[in-house]
Length: 135
Image 1 (cartoon, rainbow, N blue to C red):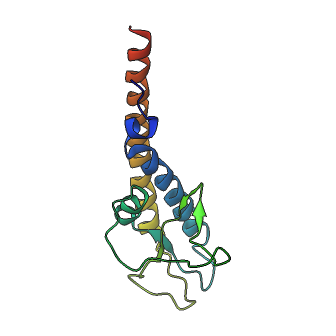
Image 2: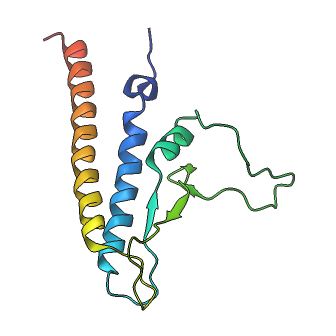
């Protein structure tokens, strides 16, 4: 009886991809902490994961009626998550909205959650290998 690997892994593979994208965004925010006019960006992880797993709530959807129309932006074959701009707690005079301490905390939390997702995937693969080899 064949089983689809995507179905077996569940949402963890999509979560790992989103966590990776969020890590890149948070790193870019930290790298541009002193850049005048830079606006900190982030992903709403909950809604992005719902969108990636196909459980997104109905809302405004992009619809194309012609093959020549520009479609939604794709990242690795899946729709990219919507980037949101972070609202600063204390705006700076140069227009930069990066709060380094907030970004470092978000980066650390995202790293822990990334590691947890890797652990879940690792145990799924370990269970699959145990079932295949019978050990």
